[in-house]
Length: 453
Ligand code: UD1
Ligand code: CA
Image (cartoon, rainbow, N blue to C red; front, side, top):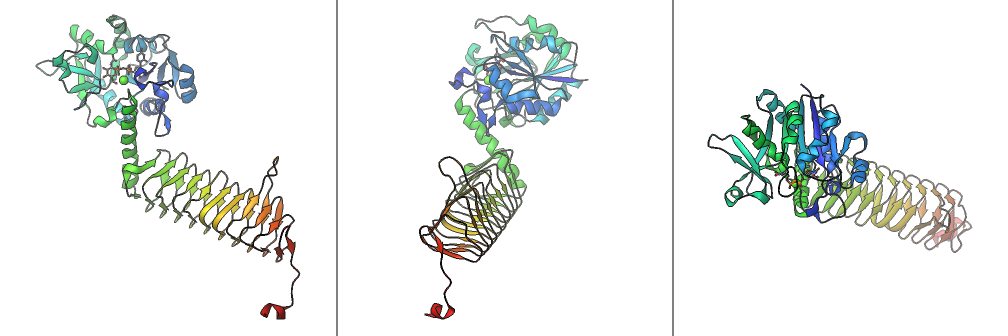
C-alpha cells in the first residue's frame, strides 16, 4: 500500500470577504495552508498535491517546495478540483487522501487512522464525520435505517429534514485510488454549475458499494474556516491547544485566554507567563522566567531566571538573570549578558550590554558595546547617527555614565571612565578619567585635601 495526499486550495473563499485568498489568511501567525501541508507530510513520504487556482502565485510562494502543484483554472467545484490531480497521480499510489486546505486544526494522527481504516475496508472509500450542535454550513450526512451512509447533502440543497441532521461532513476522505480516478468523471454537473466531490457517496451507494463513515473524536479538529468568525474561533482553539501543551510541560499560564504563544516558540519549565502576553516566531525562553503582563516578544532567545515586565522585545538575546521593564524596548541585535538590569523606558538596538550592566531609566543605546558592571545613568543617549551614517560607541568596564550624558559616536570610553551629569561627550575618554561639560573635557585631578572640603 502507498499513499498520496491531495489538498484542495483553489477556491477564493468568497465568504472571507477578502482580497487575500482564504488559505493565506494567517492562523497562529502563519498562512493557514501550511498546516494542511505539514499534516500531509506527516502521513505520506511524497509531497502532497496542492490544487491551486485563486491567488495561485501567493500560495506557491507561501508553500514552496513542500508541495507539488496542479492548477484548477476555473473553480468548478471540489470534484472537479480533485480531477485536476488525476494525470499526475493515476497509476501511482494505491490510496488517496483528499481534504480541504481550510481545516488547519486537523491532526496527522487522525489522517493516519483514516488511512489505516480504509486499508481494512472493502468499499471504495472511508470518510470522517463530525457530530456538532452548530453545523457551520457543512454538508449533512444522510444514513439509512441500518446506519449505512447514503448521501452527503450540501446545505444549499438541503430540505428542512436534512437541516436537522447533526452529523456533518468535515471533508476528509481516503479513497481506493483506482476507484477514485475511474469515478470522478461520473460526478454530475449540478444546478449551481459545480461538480461536488461529495456526490461520490451516492455514486458508490448506487453501485452497491459501501462507504465507511467514522465519527471523529474531537470536533475541534474539524473547525473548517469559511468566514472570519470561524478564523477567530480556530485561532482561539489553536491557542488553547498550544497553551495546554505548555502548561502540561511545566509552564504556568495565569490566564490562557489572553496568552498568545505561537507554535514555533519553546518555553522552559517553571516559567510563568502573565496575561496579555504575545510570544512569537523563533523565540526560545528558558526556565524560571516571569514574562508579562503586557509583553510582546518576537524572535528572541531568553535564558533562565529572566523577568520581563510590560516590554517589547524583537530579535534580542538575553542571557540568564536579566530583568527588564516596565516599558523596555529591545530591538534587533540587542544582547544583554548575565545579570543586566534595564529599568523603565530604555531602548537598546544592535548593542551588547555585558554582564552586570545597569541601565535604570530613560536611555537609548544603539550600536554600542558596554563593558561589565558599567552604569548607564538616567537619560543617557548614544547619538549614533550623524544623518548619514551610524557610528559605534564603545564603553569599557566599570564606567560610570552620569545622568543625561550625550555620547556622540564614534566614541570610546576607557575602563573606569566617568562622565558628569549633563555632559556632551564628543572625544574619546581615557581610562579612569572624569569628563565634564559641553563639550566634555577631562577635569584636572585635584589634591586629595580639597576633596575633603
Ligand atoms: C465543502 C463540502 C461540504 C463540507 C465542507 C467542509 C463539497 C461539495 N462540499 O463545502 O460537504 O461540509 O466542505 O468544510 O465538497 N475548492 C477548490 N476548487 C473548487 C471549489 C473548492 O479547490 O472548485 C477548495 C476550496 O479552496 C476549499 C475547499 O475546496 O479549500 C472546500 O471548498 P468550500 O467552498 O469551502 O466548500 P464548502 O462549501 O465549505
Ligand atoms: Ca469550507
